[in-house]
Image (cartoon, rainbow, N blue to C red):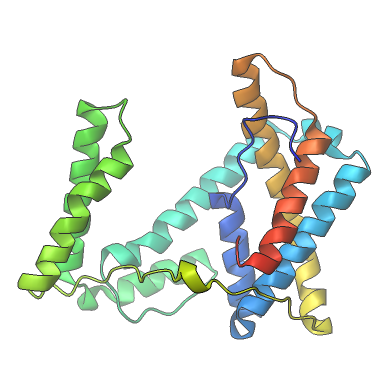
Length: 239
């Protein structure tokens, strides 16, 4: 559905922050059905906007506004990862930046030293690869080094470092949106914001990559492809 081979469709940091805030504030108890409904709304909004040829309006968005928003989103993501670095097992979820900071400080006595040391060591390994082998996939190399070390520490040293659970790809279920009138009314502004961010980020990324390759793109077609992808994710458990 895209007009460029350089199109990247997936959850970005900025849209993930808005999505996380929405699910925490209004739909945490609804589970995957609420996420499917939100993705369906986002997809429909993008498809309708593409059919109405509204992508050209994106050029009027100030670059400074976009940079400011992305900087704020990056800071929020950084703060939310601190709890994982410190190894907190019980941590209250919050969509507010200052409240999250306060919760981190309040839970400092519960810091898991093994998790903290392993996290800092991982950062050190990544910085080493970044400096010595900048052309290689440094993140993948870091994971290849740290993952077996973590497994050995948990197995023989009882480090109790939390790890990600396996994803059951063999029985990936279909998801159906939860059509609830109250939920729909709450999701309309959130879906509009995420659809706008998705279109804007897709525009910036694709223009940059396609421009380097000397090609041309149809931004309305790009918006349409992002909408179709979100509609598919609404029923296939994606994001």
